[in-house]
Length: 90
Image (tube, rainbow, N blue to C red):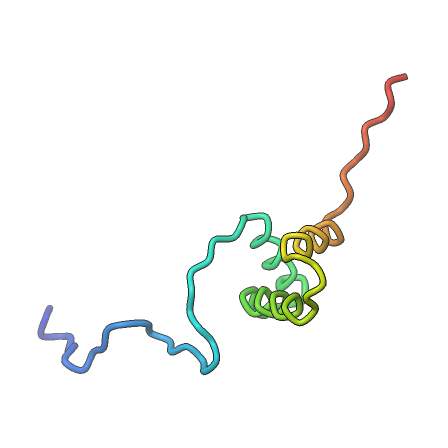
């Protein structure tokens, strides 16, 4: 089997090169946040959820009006359906 493959010109590292001006990182996000971004991309008919996250972060950096936590909470509140209210005991 080793005769069938020639790895003499193989290279270690990432298969895809990172675009100029971008840095590849690892980030931990809440599942709820990630699911929301993926749903937005799906609803739009396709795209890349990572690009959408990047655009949201860029918008926040440019605005600089409110802390990122408040921005994310506001966006999630705007996009999520309201919770049902409890009926008063009567």
